[in-house]
Amino acid sequence: MDVDLVVEDGLAVVTIDRPHARNAIAPGTMDELDKALDAAQDAQALVITGAGEKAFVSGGDLKELAAVRTEEAALAMALRMRGICDRIAGFPGPVIAALNGHAFGGGAEVAVAADIRVAADHVRIAFNQSKLAIMPAWGGAERLAALVGRGRALLLAGTGTVMDAAEAHRVGLFDLVLPGDGFADGWRSLARSLATSPAREIKRVTSGVLTAEEAARAFARLWAADEHWQAAERVMSRG
Image 1: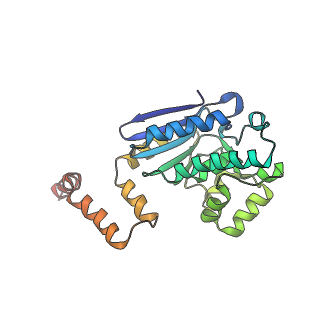
Image 2: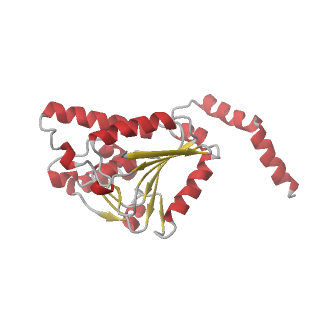
């Protein structure tokens, strides 16, 4: 199995586990990712991560994708994985990319499909498809531009610049950088917090898909819920 899924207490964790290929994406991996996303749909929050400490996702598996030679086959492959990244981006709850290791090429595209990117401090990231005389094909260029601006996205993807965690955080590509020691505990704590908060509704509002009245109604539902009043009573009891 290339992909592992664990769902617990409203949190779904999808781990790409292909150590022999530095967690690179192969056609079979795409199939397993689709199935994992199907199984995780009811979770309150989703984490995408890689196995080990060296690679989050190192891109597409060139050895397995070497059979893709025609323009038509390349189009089908690009649309297949673009659809999966679109599913990650469109997940109803918050999505965290926990970058345990480096993210290059297609791996960077998977990372920017998430709502939040949390990286270990040793991680490097690059949209370096240009080194292979190709371009991002899985929606990564558009999502990168939305995060860092069109000019910077063109510069980064056009040159294949490799950024360390500190630089990626500075330009807004990483949202949080954590020490490598205890990294898994750090992202799990954050993910559990999001899975037990109103972050699912907050994502809908920040995505701009709700009208003003719909956003107000989302707030009103939360206000009237038992969880709100239980929390309010705890605050008020402290004086």
